[in-house]
Length: 521
Image 1 (spheres, rainbow, N blue to C red):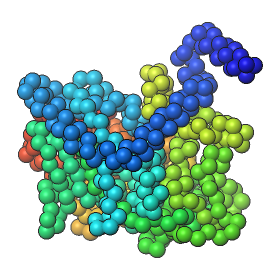
Image 2 (image 1 turned 30 degrees about the horizontal axis):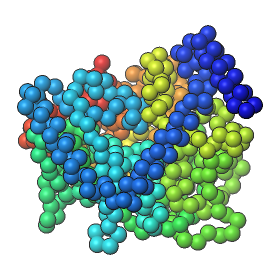
Image 3 (image 1 turned 45 degrees about the vertical axis):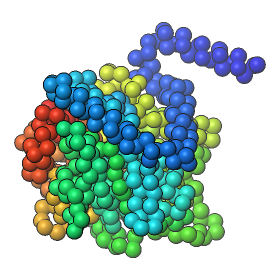
Image 4 (image 1 turned 90 degrees about the vertical axis):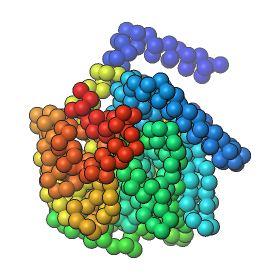
């Protein structure tokens, strides 16, 4: 009884403190208290529920039987919207706070919400086509849990557990294997959609048996403005138990860019990633999948009591030594999940302390969706003005210039470097020429250290640079471009033609109006 009484007394004292100080004060100035006491336990409950649900559904094979019925329900909702006069645009009924993007879409309150309850893995074909067929709300956590258990994986598996297939297709996704396979959209082999008139279509890439290939290339990056995604087919490849990962500290910007470029061009590397800790210091990591691990070199980095990955990597830089480790495959895929890259250090400053990791690390990380839900308007504005979360995709040949620009415009470290091959295909995003080109994702997440940082002017300056080198901005983040600048960055020719052809202009907002701050405010 004594522990229960102690907990009750602590809870009562906390509630009294909140009452005296005010909930907003606690959420802003002592957020770690709220996160540790409430959001971490809630996040754990969410994870357990969805894991058990996914396991039961797959074992009972109920998802494929219910899928067609759910799709018909979506078609019915769209047709009812048309019969009622198509008075407003449509959007998915999923609450904005549930998405991984830090942006909360206000359009949910004014548009017709179409409920889409599609969160199951429908089929895994390891024999003939070697694909997994999934519904759009399936998460990367679900996919890795199932596929790695049967010896398979996705060629590109973006690492945060809560990222959904639909978000990675309608937006985009990347991983350290993208220098071989491209972005997430490039490993997809088919999309199934419900269109603005309620009809169902399947689309595939150009081939002798292709269906609606123009739509297939237009869907990625369209943010749900061409139709409702109801299923996708994605390539799978055989998996191995471990990733043999090499850590190489590199000093000097020229040496960093040269080494990173060369490793990204080597196809024998299954994985390539860089963490930049200052303009002149980085650790470059290269990995290959393997079934064997050398004795004494196994590092199960995903275990709750282990140091956060970016801190573990930084030790190689501080000690100026190279390293070799064998990391279990699923642990490698979700290596940045526990610390949400390095964002969690701003929320729980002592989160990487060994005592905290051993006592509470098994509940980390808090759900990004719950962090958004409890953020409040004041904290949201503070984050907007004093925090950067951006991924800019630029040609690899422009990497030195890009890193100098990031350093002078926002000065955020660490910086994530992830190479990817960008094929020459139709759609919103493609290289300037007619051939595939090697690009790099520069990810900046944290508090800018540049003097007199002003979010709008600094980000517009960065966006201008990215446009000048024929780069692209990931659309989950805050975008400050005006309409003309946006369509200078992205190729809208196929997208606009299909919106007109499919009757989307009265059914869905244009992608610019859905995501850009200049259009939303």
